[in-house]
Image 1 (cartoon, each protein chain N blue to C red):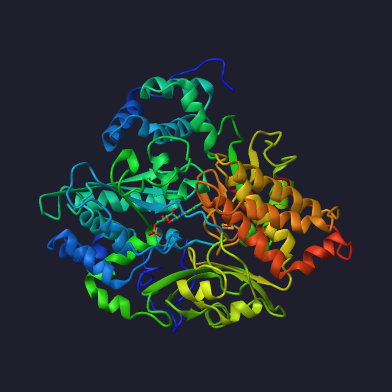
Image 2: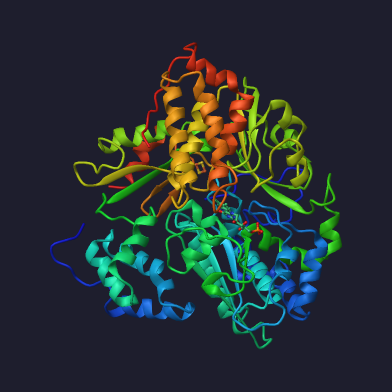
Length: 163
Length: 437
Ligand SMILES: Cc1cc2nc3c(=O)[nH]c(=O)nc-3n(C[C@H](O)[C@H](O)[C@H](O)COP(=O)(O)O)c2cc1C
Ligand code: FES
């Protein structure tokens, strides 16, 4: 997927930031994951145009970059809602009622189904695999925020902070 | 953010001593608590001497496989002809495991110190700390601590004033369980898809960027400063059962328990006591049904096995399972084993890197069969089909993700067959999967 007009990401400070990363590795290719994170932080998602730009900057091919982007689930290949909500439902959390938390998020955000964005463009809700915080059921990520011990009853209050 | 519990009297608090103590996170606070003395001590020794102490301590890898850390370090070339690397595995994604996160949140300098000592011992100039992408808070804390360590000259071109170069960089993952597998982790650092590689060559000969590399788990490396400070013999003396399992271990207890959390106990501690006394047992009115002691990738124990299991490498093997990462998942009698095993299989299907046919097809097929059984459309022969399929998925692939999917399925069918049969013969109401894969 790509946008109609494209402004390069790696100009000015961001280019400098990337250049500072390069000496950490013996190859330029190794800066690919950090570069993709920079794109996502700047634009919210990684378009085909952005992949081509990253390829150009790091001396790789666009196809190679796409191959890497598609491997890692945290890179968005499409625009997502303003608040990207990820609820863990893997076994340890599932035992503690995580599916109830997912249902509460779907209900209170207006998202019709998992992975779909709410009509107001504010939320996208997905299930995620183990977030590495199984002792704090249910952990939820909203954007970059990591929230522990979320219950279905606590969802409306929580969402008020993410408008 | 807070740390939920005061240590129980039966815990042996070494790694978790400063969990919950915000001051210990800062460089000054860490130094005030005796931090960086072990590094200073180690840097005054020969690398081989450091390795010898770690060998003597009996410290074994806490990431899952339990390989002796000192022995692993000694595989690195003695005579350095190429750059050497250390990778710290902070990908922590094994369901049930959440101890490395706590180490990074509360004692970031302890981890940096452990990495620096290991790095010196294996003669590496660079350590990459590979942190899973979702750990935004640990990443922020580690980033701050690394900046402090550089500012105070702990790291850098003249580390601790010794003239030696010690550099340490964070590398953020992007959502892939498989990148916790050591060779996949190296692929990922190199900017590739996180595909595991065939061994040999082993990382000590041909690791990240084709150079000699050692990979250790966060908890393994965080244990090292304590060993250097207090000696290999002290660490070795921490053992309640089998002499080849030494030291303390953080157990991440989760699922159906009253007080989930990280509990640090001496190797060999009884599993039953951990659940009943330290964690307050299963919720009121419930009884224990099953446990998975080592993160989701190891065989399930039934109640009797759980109650007689000693938590160390050998004790778990005696009960037919493994200590793994120390992620202890507790199931009470309300748990639907068929549903939960399906949910685990779905995890592996989602996380397969899809290189090997047995894994790519096998994990997805396992999920489909289990969902069919849950929907009330299973047939008697499905259980044998699952067992046969699991056998095809075991010991045949580049890494053990496929085996990990088979472990709970095979042990689950063996120990809770009645629950599967109840769905198949219609005595249990179908439970359609609410949320789709
Ligand atoms: C599929 C898979 C996932 C793994 N995930 C992790 C992980 O998240 N963290 C970790 O430390 N080890 C993980 N391991 C184990 C590593 O391959 C490796 O054995 C370990 O990091 C070595 O460190 P240690 O000797 O200190 O335990 C995983 C292994 C496999 C097969
Ligand atoms: S299972 Fe939910 S965080 Fe691990």
